[in-house]
Picture 1: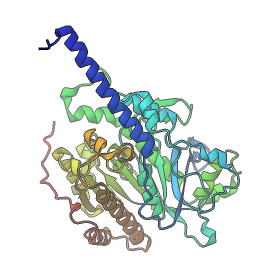
Picture 2: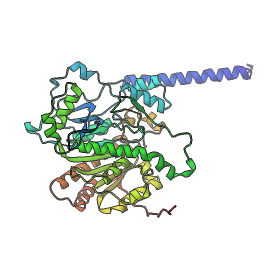
Picture 3: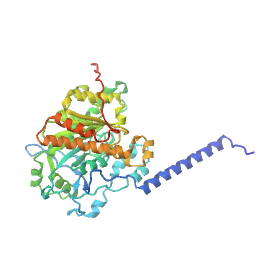
Picture 4: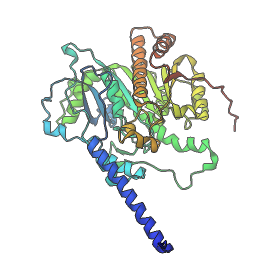
Length: 450
């Protein structure tokens, strides 16, 4: 009869077995990533034969009425309807084919912020840019100028983090500009003035957790102030006289800047929509409270994280029509629902629609659900339990409805938010009743004064 080895040998045996199991699991994941080619970006639902282009460059500097530069332009990733031919004139094919899906510094930032080793994140994000830099559709050759959608990301975000959502919106006929915020809330950014890298800023050691929401508001206020200023500068840069200014300026020698300039000339700068996720939605709300320009037509907010916004600011509401979409996970956070309701109560006529995408997680509009196999993403808590294809279709269709109805009604002179509300809610009912459901308004609790 065999004798079970002593404790030291048994420990060694169990450790070796665990190491072998981990090695097999890692080998399986690596093999899956390599063979199945993750990340996997599907064709946008609204493509219908359209061709998309993508470029990363800085917007032109913002100048005052005297022509003096007041701030440097923001770094953006632009996704847009493009010409079908491959040639780009002033760009060589070799230059465009080597643009990475994610910049190396972003990949390093993801590794630092997650539990994944650096070699693993490099393996996952080794692919090339999904859509190469192509020439945009020329509006003078039979195409209308495209509206502009400004997307602002949440915590741990980057301008590449929402590439698929940008592709879905661009395929519907819009120019999507994903902003790289330099406030330190993202994984990585570059300082527009110095060129130095900006990484995620963690809470200081003396952060007062006992202060609750007041501590969050105080800590995040500089971040949101910076974001609001960047969004204001962007919208000022994309104002109605931008085309005339670009037409008189000398063509840039940098190929990325030259292509972005050509893209902006084909944009309809009188139709601008803000889109924001999580902290980005909070920044969009505050930006709309500080803007009165006619170029901004409205906003689409995803899982707005309004905890860092004071009740006084929420009670002001916003001056532009906006639509709110929540994930199934966000619907379960009562405190966030209270903040959303407080914002709505501040200006009820501007809250034109609100719906919940059931079966989704907070990250459902980001590229996180495309990085790995779905079973693994669910184990990691990055993907909801709903049917991925149905959740994606409901999100894309509802987003398209919100953008198109907001722009169409406002552009035809019918500037009543009540008309926009009626049309959006009418169309949302036919999207997917089992997945997209109206958001039930919670009773608003009054916050005691301190």
